[in-house]
Image (cartoon, rainbow, N blue to C red; front, side, top):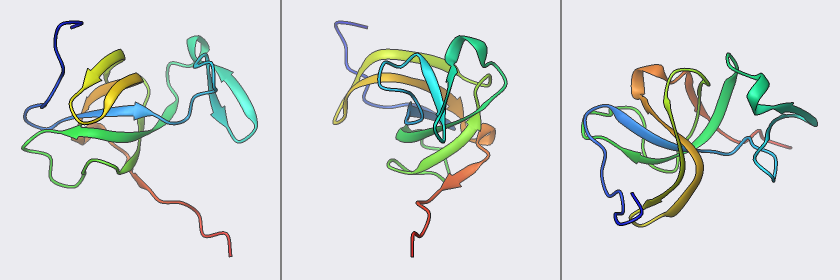
Length: 107
């Protein structure tokens, strides 16, 4: 897709960008533990929602969501209208999401 920019997804499809990766993108961070991405197939992941389809009901761009690592199609380096390039992410259906995450109150 080097000649195109993705501007929309359809139905209940969501495009997310992983936020739980190490700086080099080769490991998933769980607290201070690094787990190699190639060793993890059935892990939960955390990502920021970039695009949502017209049938998506409970999720919107900017939400942080949790989902299973093995239930979507991975994306690397895809350019998104209004966002820029998704370094590493995934297309998945809204029904695959476990839920939304919010920052922990540190008070």
